[in-house]
Length: 328
Ligand SMILES: NC(=O)c1ccc[n+]([C@@H]2O[C@H](COP(=O)([O-])OP(=O)(O)OC[C@H]3O[C@@H](n4cnc5c(N)ncnc54)[C@H](O)[C@@H]3O)[C@@H](O)[C@H]2O)c1
Ligand SMILES: O=c1ccn([C@@H]2O[C@H](COP(=O)(O)OP(=O)(O)O[C@H]3O[C@H](CO)[C@@H](O)[C@H](O)[C@H]3O)[C@@H](O)[C@H]2O)c(=O)[nH]1
Image (cartoon, rainbow, N blue to C red):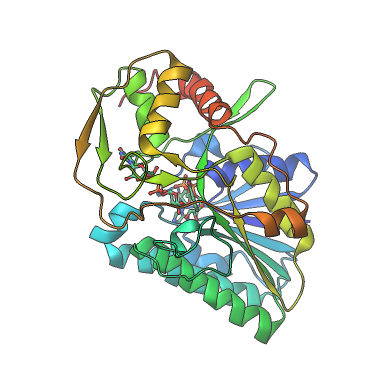
């Protein structure tokens, strides 16, 4: 297929781009590098340096794209509470512009990076796709709005749409000397920050809140290996059906508290990770654990690396090769 990947210079988009190319697809990456990295761009993909709001310049009616995979977004739930306007403009307005371009160019399918953050504090665990959607962060709300727009678009204009609701993505894609991993600047995610502390690049990890209603008072998250997540995108492209908006949660169904995650980082790296309890971070739900039964049944998705040890181990391999020597 001829595919447009927005956000293909970012963590997840660059792993999916690599896999798409390895499966023989032709890929154009649209990414203005606002948070991504030029080095993460796959050499075999064409790169277009444009904001997603201007996707119509690439998705022209005669360009012949078979599909769009839309990763480009701002992703930090905490920041979205401080700068909500930035998140609405980038994530929602940008996605609506992209959907408009998809319609005008008659692109038949679109896969969207949605998130567990659409559910807010869940009323049932593990969370099925049908659970109440009540985001606690602006980030989650900006993504839920796009999910809803895709439902309308599929029904009214026959788009084959798929939203993949990722839970917490971790690990790195390691193949024959190639390593693609997580390198956000500034980093906000728990595992890469804990690795920074283990490597001695940060003094300590701040644990945001220890008074949540969980086993040890810290938040619970469900981690998914980036390689397993990437594979679900290839399955989603095949399963996309005109006139339908399919929605799948992607996680492993196991919850880990933030303290348990830090323990695994200590074990895997063999280094101490000093922690300090800090106030809660605005917008964080207490517990997010996925039911991915639908993805398993309908997409035939089976995670190959479901353990946190695998994810932290691969993230640590990437970290030592590509992050440890860089300036903080
Ligand atoms: N990382 C996670 O745990 C996680 C979990 C759930 C959902 N997601 C979603 O997955 C997607 C990818 O996340 P990631 O961790 O790879 O993020 P990332 O920050 O590493 O990558 C995002 C990429 O999009 C680009 N980008 C952002 N806004 C853009 C715009 N307006 N125009 C053009 N390019 C733009 C950035 O330059 C970057 O390369 C996001 O949509 C995110 O919301 C991520
Ligand atoms: O220095 C830190 C960083 C994080 N946390 C906590 O660790 C947990 C996980 O946080 P983080 O790694 O930032 O991920 P989330 O906020 O859960 O969000 C991620 O996972 C969501 C899906 O669950 C995605 O939608 C988001 O894009 C992605 O950033 C939360 O309780 C945070 O408060 C800390 O205590 N200290």
